[in-house]
Length: 411
Image 1 (cartoon, one colour):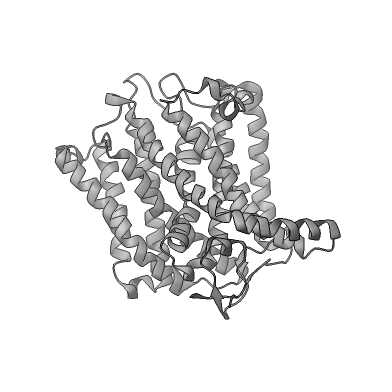
Image 2: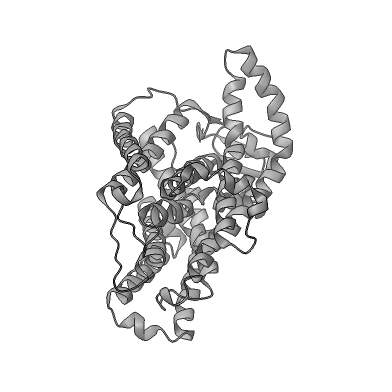
């Protein structure tokens, strides 16, 4: 039996439309207007994409990077349900919410990037037209499926709210559905473990298809493995960010000891990524390109330095117990992972010397607006539904798959 500090999850409560939420919603509203313009005028009139760069900011950041930030639920679930570390259970629901919102934004961003988004429904349903050799098809199907899985994993929080509501209909529905959901959660969690492993590695495989158009500093057969490892590290960074900022904004515990212990698990993963990255450059005789310190070498060096800095800042338990230090380390991880993925998808991709890309103002504002809407949605949902832990009393945590549906004390 595992134990954790914290009482059962409860809705934070309080006013919904605070100044922060209103400001975020105004930014998101601007993005909605620009999205309408994008759909009305098309990609050519609203983006800087071209025949050389068929994808831009919406794919490189909103999808490729955003889904990696959304792997916090994947990273925490690996520890809670695979390594049987039930003490991390209080981090599961906030991480799942962050992941669900992040993947939902990524899925919507894909629609923005499609020339004919109204045909996207054909991807999952017209299976007789599938190309079984397509990496992009696998990425699309996995992201769609994982987005659904995340909301199913999070659904006990919504059902618990319904169970405590004043509506008899909602109460009856929740009381009938929760036991069924908890019994089936084992299979949902198993699928939730499989899908990120598939599509995160495939995001790396996708750029291998570009062949010589990918710069040698990043063009390695190990790209799928590096993408998979980096998403776990970036997910950890997102969990620390969410926990730290939530503690300040909502006056909740930041789970310092828990995050410090989690950092001890992430440290060897980040070290493994850096080891593979450097050894790969040595084996492929690319150290010269790295040390040339042109724009490619410089960006690769900064990316490696940020990963190394996070290792240094988390090198000991005493360092990890300093919440500010752990926060800075997580920011380094998120920045390093973002830069690595941006480098692969934009900088290192070379369609030809006559092609160039820099995101348009519309692309930038829509991306900022989507992120603002995601943050606003997080704040509203934790105020309305039992997502965050309510207190600091010691409770026993059930580490079994059914435990994801409840954080109540167990005997």
